[in-house]
Length: 173
Image (tube, rainbow, N blue to C red; front, side):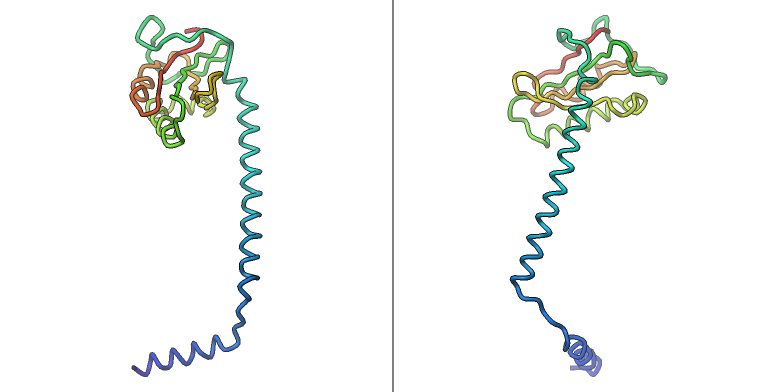
């Protein structure tokens, strides 16, 4: 063994000579307390998120209307750089998921929606997408469309993804 290693080991021995180790029961108790605190914080954050979502849901739902299948037609118009959000009669694109669709599929659809929209969602205040259960228990992700925004790119981006059952436009166009 080289002299440097021996000196380092003696220095380490001197440093840890007065070190007191806590009993294992005390270490486990501190870990359990930390886990309880984290769980409490997580529950609080989840409560705030759910309450915030419930508060914004009526604004996203808009007036009741019958769903119209998305497909080219008289309602389709191209998006313009000066697009603004609908103020009086919002138009909503709903992505309806099959029962049992999980978080990975929901996340992928949200990502594809943001990619298809570009910066239109930002011009609408950033509060244009929300997910909620429908009366049958299926998860529905709704996108509030801007004035003149074409729903076709969004539909094309998400229609064939795993878990997506159908895509519909709701509201006056």
